[in-house]
Length: 287
Ligand SMILES: [Zn+2]
Image (cartoon, rainbow, N blue to C red; front, side, top):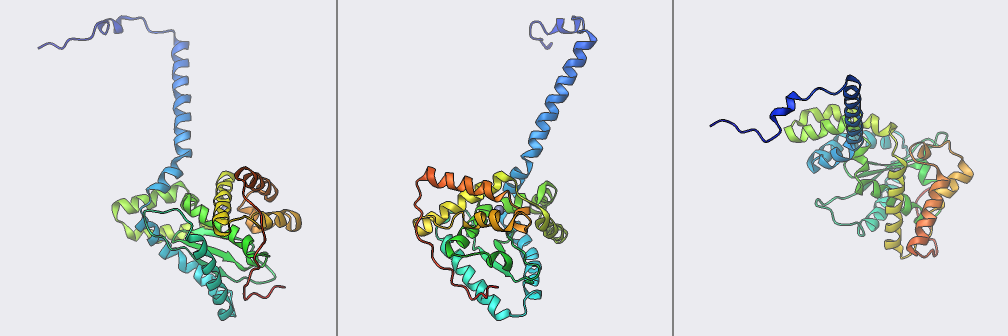
């Protein structure tokens, strides 16, 4: 049975081709459109990939990365006893925040790795790493003047986990390798991925939007934990006033004064109350 072409199809090839310029323009338009679409999809690729990393692979990666930081904690502390007491206290605080976290398909138990650093070169930073660990450096803890202020920082880091920023910051290349390792069950390649990941984690920074989202998450946790949000802006306000911008937390985080304004607006919009601060009871000797 002969194939019947729809009406008009046969005459298509009879049409005279459009002038060369028009063809060129059409091609150019197609190419530009294609490039924009490709760029947009690559921009969102890290977001998509971070959602595809299987829970088990993330935990296996964490198991390889965590010892790197635990080693730092050991190497830089002469007083192991005191720093493990501090770490215990930090974990108790995280546990309190955790009771207010939204449910996740996998049970996560967030823990802190406290890293004491030399007083001469304090590292004022905190970060979320795969394996459900929050890294807190001594230099950051030394800045904390109330429990509420510290809880805001811890809540902020929990926000990065909730938004999967701790995976997104690994970048598209590593994420793709992770997803493939999960799909292919190739656990061997995780060793080399972990090695690159540790370097990437130390050097990468989040986008401003990721930071604001994490602040918002921390603020809500603060409200749920205390019924008010005292201390939410303290750390960032002190950063911008006293310390200037030449500290680690700000090289991996956006401008402190902008964040203070954003958080204050958020507090007003949500009608959160600002009450009393609770003292921070840590076995910590401040300079
Ligand atoms: Zn952050």
